[in-house]
Image 1 (cartoon, one colour):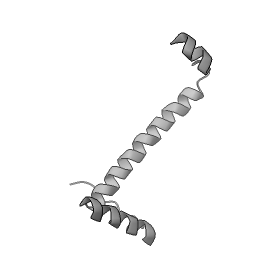
Image 2 (tube, rainbow, N blue to C red; image 1 turned 30 degrees about the vertical axis):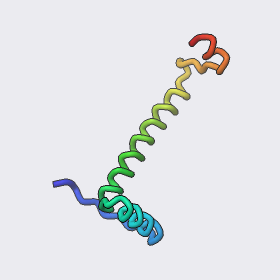
Image 3 (tube, rainbow, N blue to C red; image 1 turned 45 degrees about the vertical axis):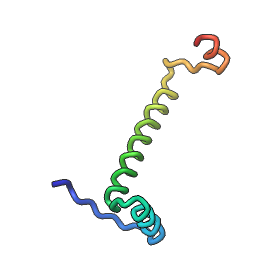
Amino acid sequence: MNPLISVSLPKDLVGRLDSIADETGRSRADIIKEALELYIEDYADLQIALNRLNDKIDPILSCKDFKEKF
């Protein structure tokens, strides 16, 4: 069985969540799971981008240099 996590949400957010659930015929839990998965993927992508941006060894190409090289 999956772990249970309890959160308190503002009423307006629950209302928006319920609207999406009604429109899509999905449960609150399914929508929250999908939203959390997307958030975690975006966060991981952001961390990768920031690590690359701060990597002094990885050169940053200008648009002109990129076009010339590729």
